[in-house]
Amino acid sequence: MIIAQAPSATENAKEEITSAWDRTQLLIDNTIARLPSIILAIIIFIVFFFIARGVKYTIRRVTRHRRNARSLGMVLGRLAQGAIILIGAFVAMTIIIPSFKVGDLVNLLGISGVAVGFAFRDILQNFLAGILILLTEPFEINDQIVFKSFEGTVENIETRATTIRTYDGRRIVIPNAELFTNSVTVNTAFENRRIEYDFGIGYGDDIDEAKRLILEAINETEGVLQDPSPDVLVMELADFTVNIRGRWWIQPPRRADTLDFRDRVLTAVKNKLTANGVDMPFPTQQILFHDQTEETDGNRNRQREGWPAYGEVPKSRSIGGSLSRLIKNQSQNNNGDGNSSNASIIDK
Image (cartoon, rainbow, N blue to C red; front, side, top):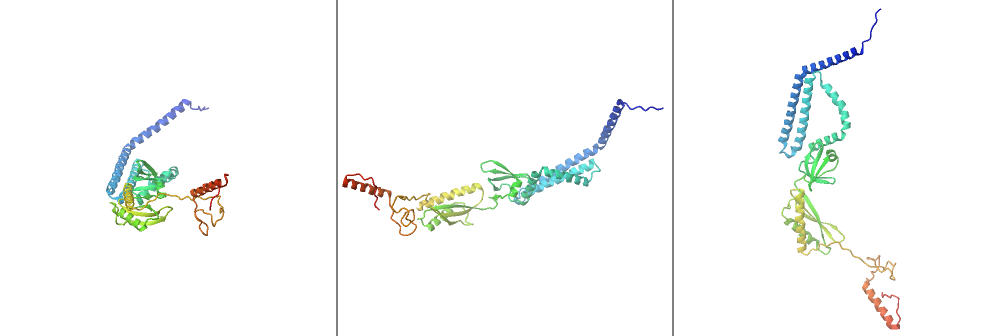
């Protein structure tokens, strides 16, 4: 009779250690065997990396002095750099793992792309918007733009965000998706820019003479363009002024130039109108007092509240005249019968 004995715990441990050591040794042997391939793959990837950087800087240097192609050069440089690095990584992987195929890479990118897309949706949205902004060029670096409540000079356009420098020396970082999906005002899109301002003159002044003086003052201001020529237009018959709008063009259209020319033109126009006796009135109001205790109160034909409703306009009455007549009547009554009359009699 044969009796089988179960292996002891010590023997099981020895077998596991031996198996682990064999696997480790096999891994070390395979790594040593592939070490030349790994070193070659790293060298090739580094070469591709520097080639990508060289292509990027070459494209940017070629388009740097061309205003219309500057942003396009930035996009092409970054895309070329990314594509070359991706190719270098693929070549390095095929050297290290000979069985690695393009189909494996496509499957890997397809599966991971969905997960990355959900996790970094906003980042990818800003990236794509930045690419479109750089390609379509609605504005460029050094342009002065207005976006919502922000206004300033574009410092840099990146694939994620655009930075602008405000006129008071602050930096604003705006996501490209916001810029691409909202309205942006580009103040420096064209070489010339028109400035306008409304000047108020009195109703008693000669409109044609005032227009001539305003236009003359604008034309005499140094730096105002004559083509397109300045013009003046009556825009509004306001409460206390006749508003005449002066319009003129300047070059270049930057913020500092706009403020400078505005200051010069307004100073020249004000001095010209004042020197020629044209009134520039400030806000005034006319207050009409109405005696609510007069006999004609409620009679729209005779009641005076600015303009009567219809019929003959009643004569105006002053408070001072009514008080004088009241004192006179009281004096006459006191002298006539010696009694003070408490009644207030106002002559009509």
